[in-house]
Image 1 (tube, rainbow, N blue to C red):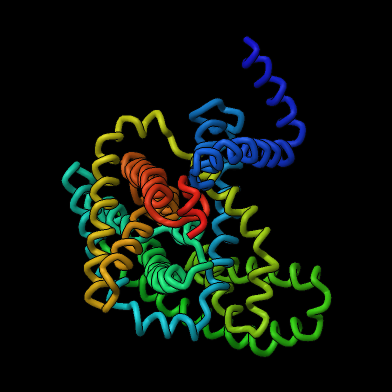
Image 2 (cartoon, helix red, strand yellow):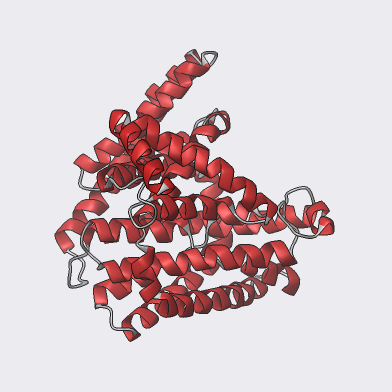
Length: 403
């Protein structure tokens, strides 16, 4: 009875001011749950997803507007990919490509085949199994780096190797998004749509580099003492590229990523990235909340065993594959295995692929929930695996927190 009155009161407030109410729910709830998560040494991503599941349409229904939830997630995705692109300078990418291309490509193929095989075995269509396979290829940049200490030389090297792999996975993920836009319901790539995307992508990239060199860089250099102007310029740059990419039949997400990549070539890219970190964290919360709110966990329980099996397979396979490939590249066995464990989870890109594929009608609710359930399980279990065994800011052992 009390809960019903409480919800009706909140519903009235939400009707009066939906935006303020939504932000209040998300960030106040996240702050309270984050406190509990830190005491239990859990990744904060699980907080945001769990809060969405709790308050969304399949939970307590405090936020039941699917349009609001969808748009919240889309805005979060755009800014998240823009800020990921900011960390991918051409020089760093070429260095990473020379060192880690074999590891990233071969491991991605193995994980994609494993995910495809499981999805096909449980009866999903070919196109759905392909999306499931693609979603298994990536590891979480956010979880991987947040659980990595950087104060010791050994872990500085570990971090460099991990970042190299994760950067290449980001590029593979963007390519997967392009393929996703061109994929028909029968799982066959449309040649016309793929050609259009392949032409539009370099066109936008080249145009962006010229615009950054001769327009954006000039403006940033001229007015770099006005922090507010830099903030506004970067937001406009990101959203402008997102809109332009959509007009060129790519996607908002790909456009935002390109916008970040071309700014990464600027001399003040590091300053821009640091200045926008609060914005990144804001939209990180929004994106993962929308993922949790859009996840039908009642239906997901019906897929618990297939999702658990897929998650266990991926978490066992990733450390073994990464350790094997990295040892062949010259890494010591302990370092290679530790990197494999730290990359054992699925990625935020896994959730993004499921989200976009479901939104476009390419995959069924069953396939989308399989990806989301398996990914959430890997987030939870793999994070605990790291904090229990390896040095981490969230480690249970005081000695591991100091290492």
